[in-house]
Length: 290
Image (cartoon, rainbow, N blue to C red; front, top):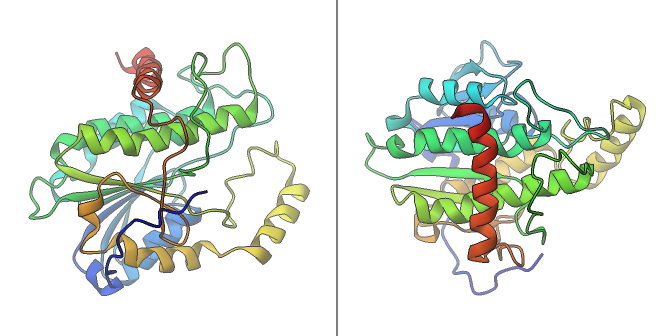
């Protein structure tokens, strides 16, 4: 991962700046999303979390919208329920890893692609025109994934119908989310959009990739927990960047786990490749919603 040494230093915000802000966290019921939602609420933000299983009922400042984010129809429905004009910050943290054997959603989409990328695209497209329209500042959108991984995505079979390789499938979602930031910075001038790469953090995101092997999963996450920050530590450390008063000047920037700007993956900025990838992604969404 190449650090952008030419990126100008910016001042950071304070958790106190969260007071009074409306924040939506898609995937805020577990892992990093949950850690962010709890930290934001503790600092007086009004947080709406979107996900399947709510674990924070009774915590002041957090409300819940239930959704099965493997379904494009659900992503569209929930987007219609969110208060887009008053949202100050929209954070996408929802995601899984592809399973050892291909999993297909009720809508005929490969499950990792649906949850980790396509549902995010649906929600952003549905919300974009109205995001922050009642606010005096631009809505900031943060897309969490692994930008800067070096993988531009493999075209031709994004739904993995003819050749299923779990890691290739997942890296296509990684590439898709990176393009979501780079393309979104051009497509949506009314908002600011950024990519976040948290690196390895102890969560349950890898459970699906291990095919339900709980013993191996627990051992792996224990080791990861020894060597990496917790979700709570990451939430606290990245928040000052998310609140930087200068961040809007750097629309479309990708950041690593320490909040340092990084270059996009090699090949991902090729206009023809990006256009083809987004077009094929849109065609998958169109199977369900058109």
